[in-house]
Image (tube, rainbow, N blue to C red; front, side, top):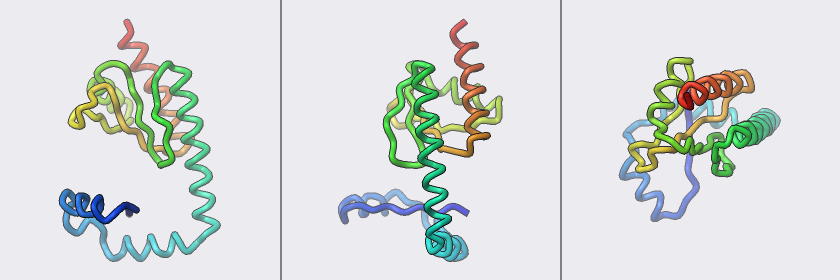
Length: 136
């Protein structure tokens, strides 16, 4: 189950309502989300692990010469400094899915969700292989 929310001005919320899909959250997902948010210790543990992993990813990508916009969320934006669409397709061959931003008018950028250290380790190994192949 996946549940998200936004905190914004009334004007921004009205824009979001214009583009949202109908019935995006089931009643079961809402109940699960309320229950999860009630468990403060679990919430703090999850937020802490996301922050740690996000910081690690940002540092590791920086070591590879990639630009990352500092994030406070559970995802990061990466500038590959070359057409990201091809990189995203190549990463998919390794079982790694990230969202390219071609349709957002940012053809060299992609969005990546912060995962577990194991999943993000797979991403880092895959991006190393892809970038190495593309630099030849």
